[in-house]
Image (tube, rainbow, N blue to C red; front, side):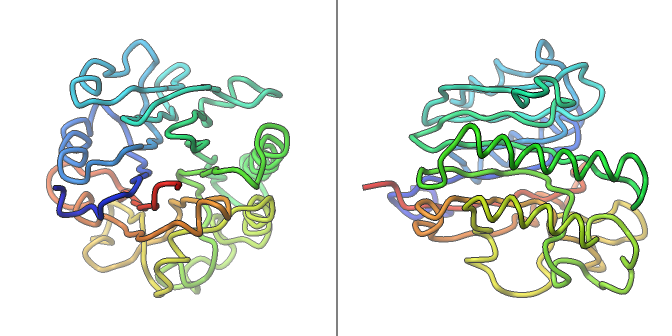
Length: 267
């Protein structure tokens, strides 16, 4: 029995891997000890043709990947509990910079998202980020029901609250914490989603991303921008949620850590 894993649960994880080419050994290591049933990945940075499908099949996972040109972005879903009804991109913009993919896994509608960074408040990149978040909300309105089992996982590039950054005074006027970004995220939550990590872990200063520079990880200077947003029917079955800081340590880590949530299986 997996010592990490309560019996009778469905484990869903999300991780911005920041390049599968660079991080594949770390991903295989994570799968080996965490054993997620479903793993959402962002910033795979590979084309669909270059995605390491055979390696993941050897580990027992089916896959869905949306990689586009492969140099930037890329989102994926791995599942060992079924993978059906795969959709990539939004209906209004099928490419959408390879930032959205969804599939049904064990009866749960799972989406893996990589929200644009936004770069700097007031720029065209920032406005594109807000537009993308609005498009995500519209896509949920058109493609899913909040009464069903739905989870939207990924790198949202938004820290929901001040307690999700190490020092709010360091982010005044910056992206990831602006009122407009947080309102756009709240609009997605208002569709009928719950931040299940916060539901399970109310403590302040729990982070999923740390800059590679200046020893930020070791000095606990981070942000919580990787989220798992679940519909009420799923959130009420959340048993445990945690950030795997171990995956951020050691050789060649991503700058993000995985977020893991265990749900009771539906009766």
